[in-house]
Amino acid sequence: MTRITTGFGFTSTAAEVLHDADLRGKTMIVTGGASGIGIETVRALAVAGAAVTIAARRVEAAESVAAELRAETGHAAIGVRALDVADLASVRRFVAAWDKPLHALINNAGIMALPELARNNAGREMQFATNYLGHFALTRGLHPWLRAAGGARVVSVSSTGSLWSPILWDDPDFRFTPYDPFVAYGQSKTACILLSAGIALKWTADGITSNALNPGAIATNLQRHTGGLKTPEPFRKTPQQGAATTVLLAASPLVAGVTGRYFDDCTEAEVVDARRDQPIGTVARYALDPQNAARLWDMAERMISTAS
Image (cartoon, rainbow, N blue to C red):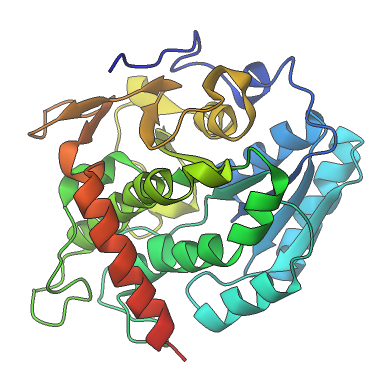
């Protein structure tokens, strides 16, 4: 299978990727769209004409961001709805209130390397619950509206952190395994990629495609538990550059019909069987494995079905 290239790369910005795009009439959701690369994702999609909903835990702060973006872009169709992806009850409320075809769902919200083991109200390890399980429940719940859009796309923001850990099948919540912040983060980001692989297995007949990505190293609040961004300067990106691969997968005709793949710097990543010293542009084979994708999907279905 030939790896996909697009003509865009490390230095490309979200605005450049969507320079000629016309997204008028398209409706999109960006989780965590009120901070970091989420803001730039919303901005680029809105400038191209999409109606964008910012799904955010802190609604008041998100409303302020949305107002600024409306003023900057001259685009009125930027709204806010409450969503805490770590709380499955909040996810269910969001899904129940959604009532229109959805052309793109961007699963962007996330947390990283919590120094101490924390769990959500359903007892799940917090990084797994936030980065993956809540987004799985959201995507699963919005499936009818994605199908109704015809040609919808689901985008999951992952990380090179996925190379730090596969899924801990027998102990994803660290009830026996000693907790490690980066192993937990890695597991959650592997799960994000497997979500896209699972959608490719299950929903292609519904006209829904899905891909995952590494946005790159961008200094945002995501690193607040790690002491700040440690990546050397030559490998760092601006938030505008960090959002480029996200909007490419959400809206560019260059990847229309592409599904179940993983991208880095607007290019499909190389599948590897061992971690390299320089992991940029690579993805672990376990993160795209169809059997792993089906297994995780079934496990997540059980998890959300038993949660209060």
